[in-house]
Image (cartoon, rainbow, N blue to C red; front, side, top):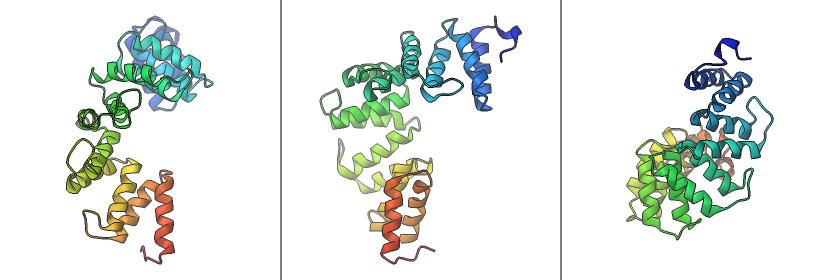
Length: 240
């Protein structure tokens, strides 16, 4: 419950208090602070309020409301909200799916330097989702996001180097990028790195390291990694 003395506070103060409450897992108070800041048209709070509605943090899930608040924030040019709204359009969360509109919002966000949007835009170009397929353009967007530490983009740069998408094949560079992403906890990169060690791709074959990386991914629920661990066991490979 928000204390009365904060009801008329500056929206940035309310927003920051919402962030603190959220970090303490007090989602009900976080929601209330974001709501009050949103009523003052504070774009970051509107975005976080949308996230609360999307993820059921402090309020019952309401995807239509999530879209509503993401849109309010995005219309003020707030890059994270533009990216989130793009994802709603791409995945059909709370609104009819429309990949072309999703790309428009990703681009608006990416051009402001927001790494998750840059990564998503790279994926769209890589796969021809809402735009003509362009692997070089995909690589460029992934590079921009990866430079900011985006693990999704780092992983996909690794894949670009492994498969020659937009760049010349270079397994050593692929491994460097997989390693960066994996070390920051991205499960698909951990699984892929495990596969490289299992099969001696760009590294000396090492079943224990393969298992180690598979296990990092598996504990995060990565099904491919779980399957790979089972395959190692079926092959009778000693993992300890």
